[in-house]
Image (spheres, helix red, strand yellow):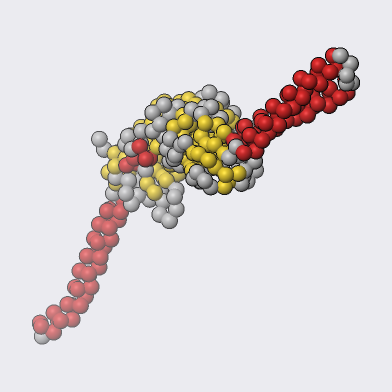
Length: 339
């Protein structure tokens, strides 16, 4: 009898126990959920940051000359090879001089005739017109000889280095470049600069050029030319930079990076561990602590300086950013600041 009564009350007791346990579990969960995340914060301060912009470009020769004979013909000699250093005015190659020799002989005969005509004119033997006609022939022949001489002895118009040799002695060159001479001291670099910097860049401005092939060694350069027009598609304008190259380390074709300092601005510097990346995008954000809560804040990054980032926009001086305990935070989460 007593056993049957106990059996009747057992389900009711189990129900009460289960309800009691469920209430405690919910209370514990709510307590955990409402527990503030412990975080460490740093106050944003403005610091002077150099506004350095970097550009990539290929090093070019300052001047390039293709040496050829305007008259064409057979090459008699070539006195230089690829890699040879040449001086301005140096003879690089000679062409066949047969035509030049013929013209020189003709000029010598014309000079003799002119001297005889001049004597006859002085005694009244010929007219002024006849003397003038011979003088014209003499001048035309002299001009032809000067042109032939220039195209028979090929002279370098610049000091530089031979970078190409396309023919050998005995070959016939008809207007094609025989040699290429490049002046590589100084060298130049042409970069494309955003139009928003047009008023900030000026001729003579100091820059630094770094060549990847030279283990990042930097060279001093100056802005030598600013193009006057802006590309309507890319909204950039070309800027030419001249770089001294006395030891000839820099060579045309090298990949380079150009660094230009546009002055300093006071900007927030934030520890890199405070910066988070938005999943699925390139956005960067931080959490700002205000009144015990964490607030999601988008930021625009500038340059990295050591273990900190320059912040271009998104933060103000005095903001308290979370630098530790910021993982898995949600906008509006309660936080407890600890030292």
